Length: 294
Image 1 (cartoon, rainbow, N blue to C red):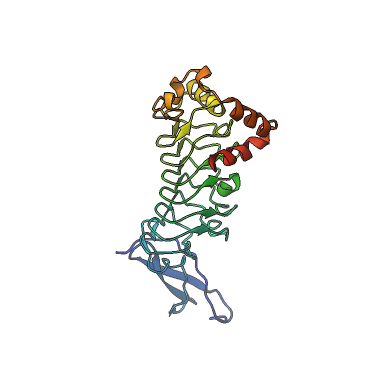
Image 2: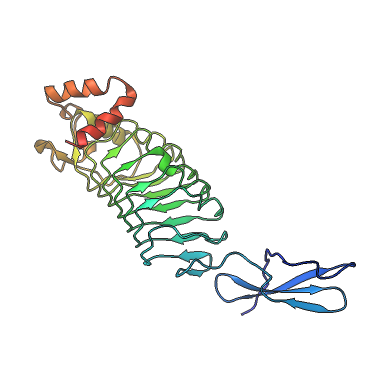
């Protein structure tokens, strides 16, 4: 079908008309996601059609499917994010591929209209700092079913507009007090089905608009190091689904927010170790990772 379209274009070659006024106009035929443009040059006396000299936004990346501002590159066994993603893309589907590392190569810097990125069901173990720079308009990021084992603040730099962060079904064992720095607009955070046993105090303090936090299906060790979380959950109006303790045995399957403060206890040796590692605010981060490696 045909429709009106505003095309950005260039005309190559030498001057087509010497002297006088030259008018360039074009017709765009929309067959799918991208217009195919036909350019005409008018000197006032005749129209000349130009072949292959009217360039619109780059074509759909190889093997991907593009329609209605959605670029679908799922199920293609890709090992990296493809290049030349059209600047008008609002949703990018990269789920069910073989991507292991998200490299900071600036792929999102030209995608100012992007709203949703789906990277679920890949093999991601590493997200380089600054990967998402330029993706400030993105409000949904799906990283479900990957192999991430920790969360660093630099991983999400550039995602100031993010509202939903899905990290379920990874191997995350450590959440630090700077893991979510800069994500001020996140309302939903899912850490469902990871390998969390403890979480650094203040880990969620930067998530100022958080309304839903899913911590279910983690093996929380409800000792003195996690007492802060029980108190934090009780004091916030946040939907959590009632995450439960798995250790010690006498607290197994008890919701964290239902555990009395005195029951978050450490043995004498553990308490001494806690004091040794946490005498400074920043050192708890190291202790968190050390405990989980035991």
